[in-house]
Length: 133
Image (cartoon, rainbow, N blue to C red; front, side, top):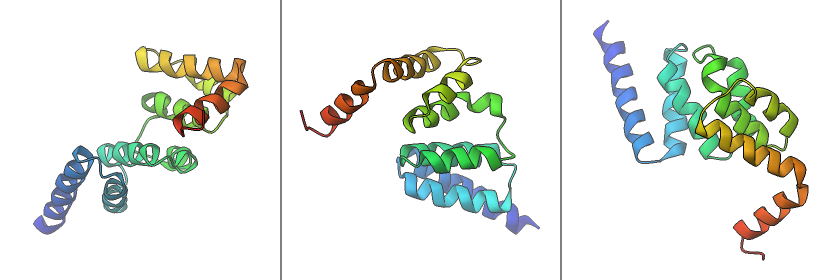
């Protein structure tokens, strides 16, 4: 019986190392392994969510939030609203942000309002980030 715990501990250590190294592909792989053994592991679930966002897999992140049993929706408002914002679902993002507080929530709220009020801003911002302007 000690072997499964040792295996989970090893996976968690490797997950922590991958996250600190910002190796998000590895984080995704390890968090999936951990969640298959321990579906209620909130640390692994949060790391998977972050990895999906860092890898620009916003649809996958939202799908994961819908199926995840380890994370409470109240604790993932920022991640959910950010994904919605990045997918252009500004009205949905605004609705999620209604109950969010803090500086990060204000930042996402401001970006969301900016894009909603000036759709051209999204094109300009993308053009700048890719060096087209």
